[in-house]
Length: 457
Ligand code: ADP
Ligand code: MG
Image 1 (cartoon, rainbow, N blue to C red):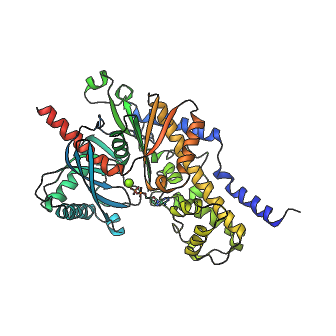
Image 2 (spheres, helix red, strand yellow):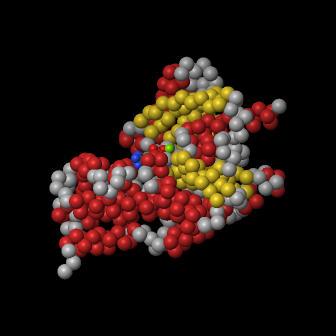
Image 3 (cartoon, rainbow, N blue to C red):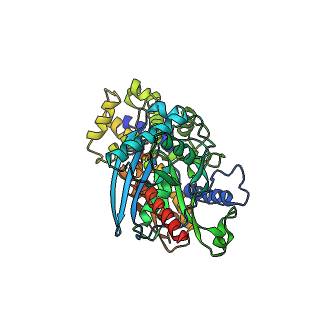
């Protein structure tokens, strides 16, 4: 007779089976990612190409010679940040403030969102005594945008819980400038980038091997330096192409899988998360990886285990029944303590109003968290491996920003491990890009205004 515990463990493993992919599955994800990237770079990208591979117009990376004062805005999904970057003799001085975005503003009229942003800039410049300075500003706007120039960028569609009317299809800089003009501010936006580009540019400032930027935060995305000769859809100056110069491509890889190509690994839990999201059928890869969703994937598994009668004696607390109530930070908290220590885990169960639980229950909850976060790290690794294959450098630094990567205890090591398994001969390192999405925007503003000065001279 198998013991009760073995029976329970077997049932759990059965439930987790679909989340545990094999190396060959990740190899296939890497290959599919590569195929989808190629499709997105074609002269006439297939409308069904999931990876939009947007040209960012950022063609050079900082080299440390930039000087001056620059502002940056960072709208990433969770908060709005305003930053002031002062570059003197290769030194970087940084000041910043965080402003919250109310739920209502996230789904209200676009005009209100931009007025709120302008009001935050006003507060910041007043606090810093900069209201009379005409400062160039870089804007990190981390939503899928089609760019037409460094400061011309149309929002394609909202993601990450935002849904403001009157912004999709519009030029972000125009909307921002209108709001800035209403506040009578002197600031002018000279560049729009997204957070992946910010992470990469900020890291490249100190590390010339940096060729890839990744975000693992509310959402996930990646960018990399591509050779213009490989961009079939390049319609800009042909001399750039003849010289084989590079430009940063924003992959928008969060949408990978929207065409169903990841169906071979998606689970019933992923489908449930997708169905209850604000954008069903979209951002499939993102929903298996990023901070906005991982806790919910774990909650879906826990609820199933409870309904099976395997966990918490079948008792489902009201809190645990609530969508999005299992935060992604719980995964970090639970996984960062030794298995025999249960302080964080008990704290989480307490927050979830789970009153009665056994030691086995605790082991199961941790197993679920590990299964969900490991798959996420491996899937992100498969994407990075596909990008490494495109970058023709013997050693590549990959800049990574975002709270999930920053705080999860094993995300870095699991990603490194899986990239190593997928590409045994490649040399690379994953490096946290501290504050990248803010500093990067200011640096792009610096490069672009200094390029302008150089061109005019
Ligand atoms: P954004 O992507 O909006 O710029 P962040 O990089 O801070 O912001 O990412 C926020 C996301 O990170 C949230 O979805 C949250 O669930 C997740 N997160 C926050 N803290 C942690 C943590 N300790 N461990 C794992 N994920 C976290
Ligand atoms: Mg961010």
